Image 1 (tube, helix red, strand yellow):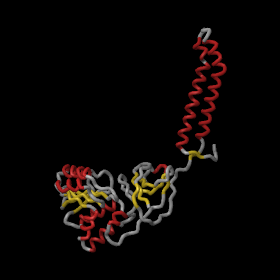
Image 2: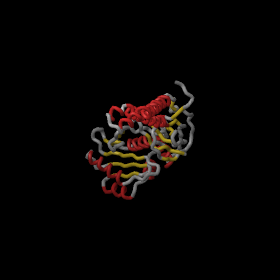
Image 3: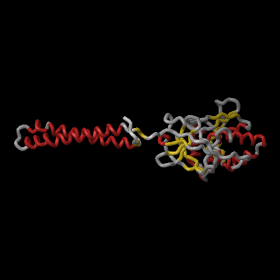
Image 4: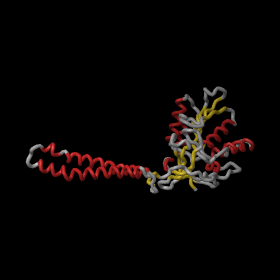
Length: 300
């Protein structure tokens, strides 16, 4: 059956209440229809039951059938199209604004790509997504004496980068990376990282963030052999590299779709979407609905 009307799937769920009311009315009508059988020969109940059976019962039955038929009709109405619309890519600088929505009720919106910086500064950390930041950290440490290996996605057990001399199975230090735009790394994160170090029998660890550490986090790091590297310190460390090495790290930062977040679970680029329910923007995994991972959107 075709109809020009369109309804949302959530509205269709509400229509099921009409079906439930119809079923209830039908059951009540059937009960009243056979009520004389339960009244027996009682001089009071039998006439009342016969009256209910002849009038009220059929009224309820007809109401029930009508409501059930109405639900069957509404169920045939074509729901609104929830498909994703692809829009052309544009360039713009962005800032963060977190939301927590699923991609199911959304449309794709233009991907916002900040312009590449030609020198190392804090803007680079703002421009790039978390995976690019980890890649920069790995590139920085690999320029030293130690070799590195990292994990692109999935559960990392609190370790983003392993550092070793020759045998990757025998790490001498580990690195945790946090590319935060505004959030300060608290002592709770530092304690968790220290627990990971101990679990692997390590006395050395590097905690790197583009943001800053709280006073308690910095104190804990100093007391437990953790090298806490905030955004300012990381820039100073990068400045100690040769111009060629600095350019190499900058190229790593701006590699590929550097502004588009990578799904933590799948390791693929996410899709920028806008929720049709309230118009808010967010990043959703392009593997949806298999993966429902979302992260905060960076808005202008």
